[in-house]
Length: 206
Image (tube, rainbow, N blue to C red; front, side):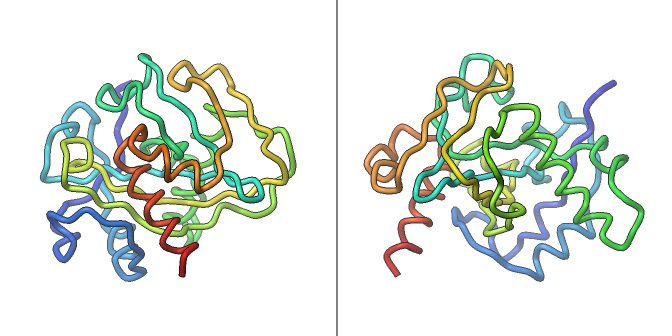
């Protein structure tokens, strides 16, 4: 069955178009959730009329953040061999089917997509300290990948830096880095991760 992914018309981002920024806007989030549509992935991969919704989960153990390198088998060809601090991927129609029919349906949809991506790619070998918290969005219209994707960033805190791969071929070496090391190695990371590293550094310095 062809994958159908959650998208929304990029005009919803009217005040953020042609920008590259990490931010949070609650009213915008409600507009996005109320205007999702499902389109075959192959039709929107390079169609700038739409933004594909992507969950992007940061995992933090004490003061360390999980990082990894994408392999040649990563699903998004344009991100292969790049380092990343985000585990995640598209929200799809299957996630909708498995969400509840309550008034929280769209919120449940995002939660389901997030946990599906985590369960597919990694094994968490310690206690969780929180439910993943929505901390910000990423909109980046500076390059081809960013022009058709919109990141919804969650932070998951865990007790210890104890993570292993779960047979996911697109993920290479896993390593926990402190923020200073991430900042020093920022040039090795994919664009979204670089933007997030800058954002996290600014928050820490405030």
